[in-house]
Image (tube, rainbow, N blue to C red; front, side):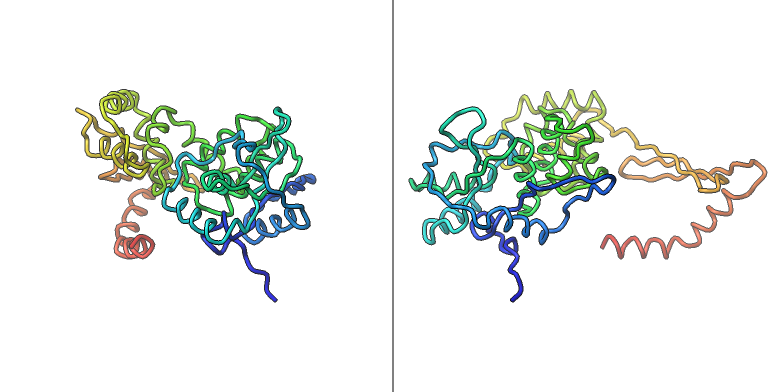
Length: 326
């Protein structure tokens, strides 16, 4: 009989086991990062298999020492609450003995189930395991990766917090916790290092992906724009609207030039052919894209020849672009 993937149901917190990798090891250069839902699910089974489930008073359980979720999806929480009210808590949470407060516990994963139990006035079903801080964040991070319902910015800020804890010099713990590679981590940290007051004002926007956050990061690299945006935010109440709406407000203020006199700084790049015979200066300001070709040898005609070749194939190139970006 095929093994059921516990993460196939969007109600992972209620119906599926949660992933951890407490026995993750590194041997020489083979530092593999867990990258699939099935692998994470298998580790979840291993973690909880054969463990004793106990009932705990929610008042004795504290949240994790590392925050991952910036704002909660109230509808999803109410759906989970209704399911537990009707069916009971079918999947236990994972807790550890509190590292500094005897007689109390700390959640590793299952924060929403803990909240539900507290609101319903019920004990919370839990597995208690004594684990280190490092194993704690790995388990919490991989549970986030498997359930896939945290926004990009929430994952990025979680990565930044883990990186600041500095469990190892090469951020291996962070990559293991989030099941990502070094390049992806670098991109996450570049966004998470944006001005913290702006990030806090926006919160846990769920819809914007990496590219939209990169666009905002690029806009805010202009000090005058950042200063003016802060002035606008100080005069505007964003209470009562979700993170998506707050992100949209900020981007609208920038891209529609609600900031007086603002014009985005053009983005500039330089491209060189592998044989170094040709280079290109690239300039983009969002509305236009200019590519200026230059031959290395002033007597050569590579720039003119390649430019004519590109122009000749513009129809085909545009068709390929539209196929990729319908």
